[in-house]
Image (cartoon, rainbow, N blue to C red; front, top):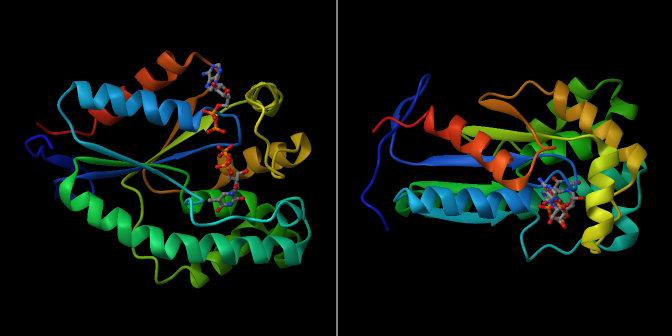
Length: 216
Ligand code: ADP
Ligand code: TYD
């Protein structure tokens, strides 16, 4: 582990670690950028712990991930939330010993993916998110910085098709709704990054944003 660096967040005073969430639709490049960006931070002497949601302990059955009904979305949300409850304990503990924790997805994924479906019943995305926040009220950790890799769903689908591995969430129409939701959710510490460039270019853009928040 490197010597600790003090990171300054404008509205929160000094903190000695930074929790970063990478968000975006499937194929936006989160896991590639997460690895590349961590390498760049490590080269600069920082310690980084990488993680992701869903965690390896959650297996969503394919039939459920294909279920875009209201009850399906609620069931998915509750499963992701239970997984997240455990995950935040691990993240909090890793923040004690690392400069950065970078998570490929966090709660904003639920707001976007499940929010768009739940909104059909509650009447608006805002009210769906209010309900999801109340269910998540014991999750007392939020990212210091959320980097939203924004990308056209057509390009994202091309990328996931060539990746081979598929999830039931990868449907172009659904991903277009999810992208719109991502862009409309008010989130503290959100930065939108154009995800259509090369992995190197997108990672450099993310690094620039992070460096802008570090006080040496
Ligand atoms: P996500 O984690 O957001 O689903 P991945 O990082 O797994 O996305 O990327 C999906 C696929 O697209 C992978 O095969 C990856 O190699 C490729 N890929 C990721 N980022 C880029 C990029 N910026 N340019 C071209 N291909 C990319
Ligand atoms: P994953 O294989 O991690 O996909 P990717 O690498 O493309 O991000 O599968 C995670 C899937 O779970 C993804 O399609 C989005 C979905 N998801 C939600 O719908 N809600 C959530 O809260 C989370 C954490 C993930």
